[in-house]
Image (cartoon, rainbow, N blue to C red; front, top):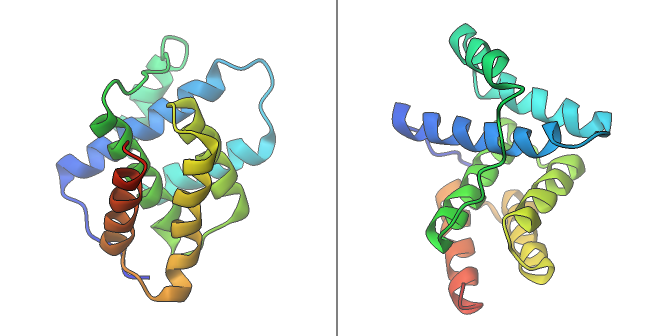
Length: 146
């Protein structure tokens, strides 16, 4: 699957979404190690810098989940998930599980989440680019009047 390149601003936005996902798990008393492993993998693949890690270290205890307010913000969060999942061009079950959990946390219905992640999981076999997947998800959400 062909990935789209992100501008510095877009990468910063994806990293912000990463921190938001992380904040959900930081608020839990018990977190499965497979989720932590997935999050660490994404952080490495996103190319977190020493400065990113310093920011993370300072905000670990004060970071709170920031619920996307508008449907546009939720759509952007889903697109960031798509980007993180495809960082290594391999869609892993744990990535879909973690992404499904997050999508439900931001208010997407289970049925819609299942359809969105079916688009993501089948894209490599269909030869779709990241941009094509995003457009398919946008159409799907329009269909569901999201």
